[in-house]
Length: 294
Ligand SMILES: C[S@@+](CC[C@H](N)C(=O)[O-])C[C@H]1O[C@@H](n2cnc3c(N)ncnc32)[C@H](O)[C@@H]1O
Image (cartoon, rainbow, N blue to C red):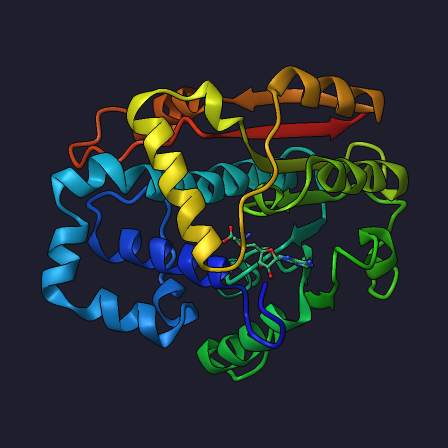
């Protein structure tokens, strides 16, 4: 990340959610605030009729659409599991690790008034986000069940950041960690998972996405993964972290997690993108994993 400004990949992810919400028939994930959450350059591009048409053409959906699938698929999966965790497991704490420009607090905080929401992110991203959230909320105020906690993962542990908030580590929590492990070394990702397992309550859950080694990909998937890596390098947030699924499972099981589910790109496509007329599919380059603490 460039010091002093919001994460560019967080802005790109919001722009992808905005495009999907505005232009897809039957969106897999709808974020009506994403357009306002992204930056002015992305808004300019999304407002250009010609570009919008090209961006949502069949050809683009079969290529660029895999990145859209990744971004909207991970949010949809997480919020499906969160709903289940709230309604069936009575979880009342939601921690968005590396929340970026996700608009959960505007879309759903009031629907779950008993849910305590903790947004954890770099202060530079949070500063921009807070300004936008205040502008976009009906009252100019943020919901009272949300706390924003700044962190620099390179300097601080998640447990230390959460200790500055009202987070209750004796109670179960649901953690989402989306679109971030790709930018961290595998050791840093494992250290954070280990940290979560060490301080959080029994029955806590974690949902995160992770990259698999691009050498395991073939054809258009390999090419697409290379293109995304060049794009994020250009944004000064290079992709540096990937895992072999079995190695990751073994490591997290040693920390006390149960792997509830690990969905490959094909599995996610099967669950959420099957038979879509617009050809948007999930990439094979990333997986979604659901972990529970025993
Ligand atoms: C690609 S964005 C993902 C945002 C969001 N979860 C989503 O799915 O759209 C990556 C996030 O990681 C955060 N991040 C990157 N490096 C960080 C660091 N060293 N400390 C804290 N947060 C960091 C950025 O601020 C950004 O919000």
